[in-house]
Image (cartoon, rainbow, N blue to C red):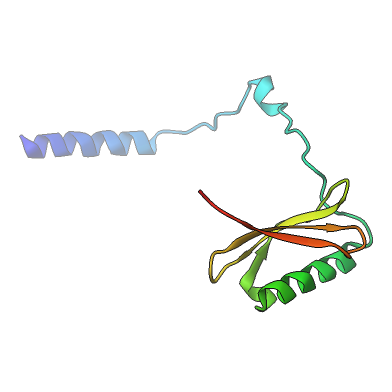
Length: 114
């Protein structure tokens, strides 16, 4: 009985694998026209490298670890200045940082996970 069942399953799988396959195409227009609402835009001007360098040095001075041990989000421009998140990948600590446009006032807050 077991061998007949095994042969039947094997036969069905061979038949189903050897038949021609057609790729299904999505025809629902609502799915292809969805748009995601824009969040705060990332920094994309000519000062990007300078801003990145300043922010990386702020993070390194705060944590005292090499930049290779840090994961950082994109930099968001807010009404008051810049905002970004970063994480020490070795310890798992998360932080949220804000600064003004001149980098004179820097606020770093440890992000507590629930």
